[in-house]
Length: 240
Image (cartoon, rainbow, N blue to C red):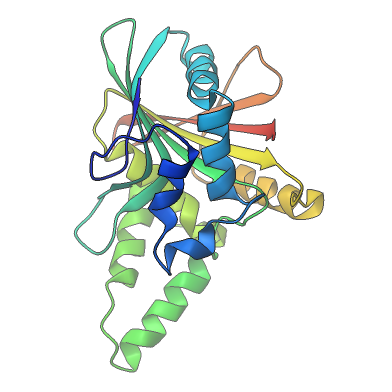
């Protein structure tokens, strides 16, 4: 298994991973106890890729081989702006020969972004005052992808989850997995994390996801069909 950055440069240790966040803008994400830092610790110091592989294999009922791990990996899902950036992307194959893409959303107690209605109204307001933005069109297309019958309640989901699912399917693997990993660190806030979990479950319910039975009690699974493509969604808390 190889770990590399988005430019193809190999990552062999924690310091190599930290270089990804060396710019002034990215450095704000790099804080001990928070999600980006915790994701690096998990993969580099706790053999996290093996844990992810085992969890996904359990959900899929297939053995997996992970060949490549890439932090901060971008997947374009439309032509309307920046793509979905996965905190960790894992590429591999299943024992049936199918390709597998796992997009990890790492959390501690960070929220899943704004509500769709807030993002949509804010972007429409920008258009009204003459600011150029593709956000309303992007949101409308994402909602059409997830909801066959429009409903006002679809605006009460978290925008990040809306494009995270689209940005996992868009990688084009035979098997697509979105894995939300919540790291329990020293900065973990139980109350906020519980609210985030309710947002996650609300999203799954709103988009019509079906539960997947998984033996491990700590791992929760759902499946969603987007544009006739199956997406497996997993959620787990991990002590770090």
